[in-house]
Amino acid sequence: MGNWDKFNIKVVYDSDIVPDNLVTKYQIQDYCYQKKGVWKIDFVGFFYIHNQLIVSFPKHYKSTLLLEKDFTLLSKVLISYTNTFGVLDKENADNFPYKPYLNICNYYLNYGLYQEYETILKRGYGGKINWKSTINKSTKVINENNLIFMRFYIKQSKNLSVFLTECMMYVLEDGYKIFGKYFNHGVRYTTKPNNRIFNRLDLVVQELNYIKGSYFKDSTLKLINNLIKYFTWKSNYVKKDKLSFLTMSFANIWESMVEKYLNENLFLIDSHNNQLIFKENCNRFKKKK
Image (cartoon, rainbow, N blue to C red; front, side, top):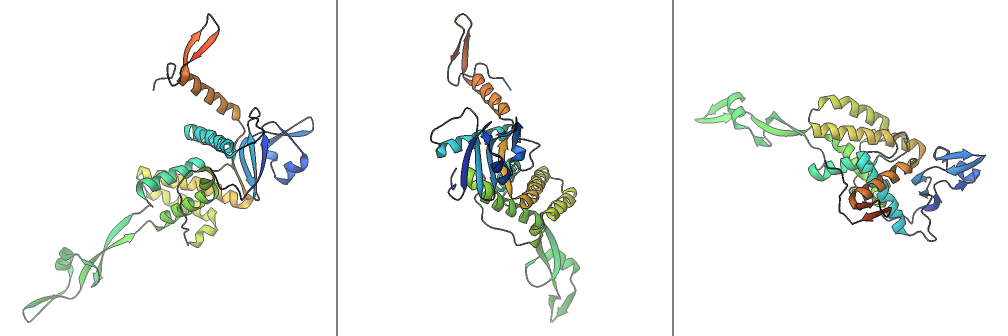
């Protein structure tokens, strides 16, 4: 995690009281609750708007001096939970689509940019000659005992995947720029597509939904579905200039963390002395898959 110098960072804690003017200024009404006429923070994670980054830690995570390792730890907890359960908060449309972005990055690392080619034959003289088609189909002239083909049949490859390739380029560049480089995730990618359709992301989503029915390979369909999820989020983000990577249900994350720790490290329950005996990575109570 790094590159945070460009942001104005404000640190808060879950359940902290916040003044009305801060709630209004940073438009965090959806991530707060009111009790007895005062606003309180109701999220854990990262919220960005207009170059202001608000970082909210769990309410019992108190430190006199927060360091980069604290931000890194918080991001790792949220990322780990997202990797396990697929999403932080389903109802939060502002949350960065981490899972679709990561899936697109993994596709790129495994296969590169999407490519699909169709082999076509055309008449001409430049290119790789398809002799079988030339002999069978081309007009032939005999001149001074020489067989002359009036035109060859040339084999060419036509790229059928320009749009999907450009969509991948857009997500890889955009996702790294606004998320990946700060959270040390994704792929460092800096090339943008030039297609003007990316000025209308709603049309990109519409086109992806339209062409999805033309593909049958599982990996390609998963790629398209992840692209649709990313562009659907991005089209809303462009309108709002808000980005979040947070949860309003940190209790669920805490419970899963405690359960994981106990499953992996609890060695013995000493009922006689009312003690829990721990042994690192003993996995004695871990559920078998």
